[in-house]
Length: 289
Image 1 (tube, rainbow, N blue to C red):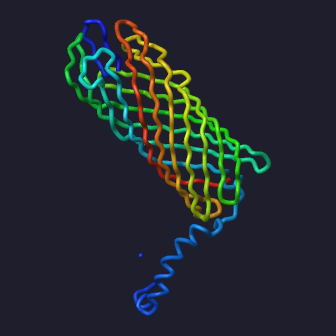
Image 2: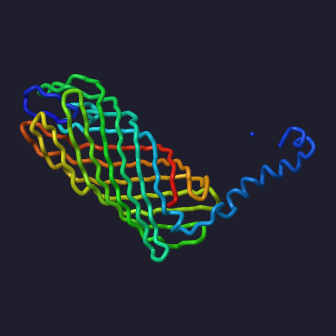
Image 3: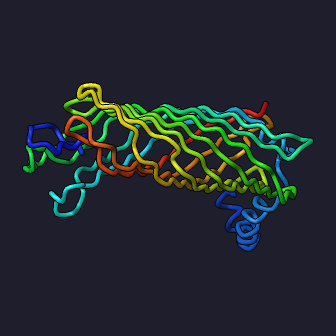
């Protein structure tokens, strides 16, 4: 939230049966030991090349835990934090993947929209005087990502994909007193690991990068500034199960951390250095095309 540095008052946000079990207890014990092992080591239930595996369209529903904080640039607070926002917001995501069967090329694109309220804990500011303040902030976020990778070190069950990724994030932050609009782009380098020993499959991915550009607007104040660029990192994992040759169910957990540098002073106010951590838990359904 914009922080005032002039003395004028302003808002600051800154489970076989039982009979069989008794008759054949040893057989049951052996079965209970070997069955999970067989599930993990059996070949995929529906034989697919990696290209076929990664040619999917998917829809995910999830929740995003939003954790946002702004630093105190003037030493007016005891912990150096001017405000925090915490809460869970709903997310809808669409994704498309494609991998070539002739060349080492992997492509992925996602688009998501998240909305909901977060709990704001901060202050109202009058000059150098801070008054504790709590409210609910409305949030609408849209994210678009494009990933391009080169599959390497492939076997029938494991594949590694180094990749580059471009992200665009837009946040419509509806504070109690006024609205702020953030837009940033970012570039990342990462690696994705895919393992499919059976009908189950597991994916892990990690990336680090940099916010390339970020703009913030607060129309009520006539505030429009470019913010400082800072680092970004993300980690994620997905567990999936092939229901049929065409349909796959999955659940994913990802976390992303990024931040913005302090803005320049405009009209006696500025936006302090801040940081955001988003953790997303989702379930989805994918279709092999």
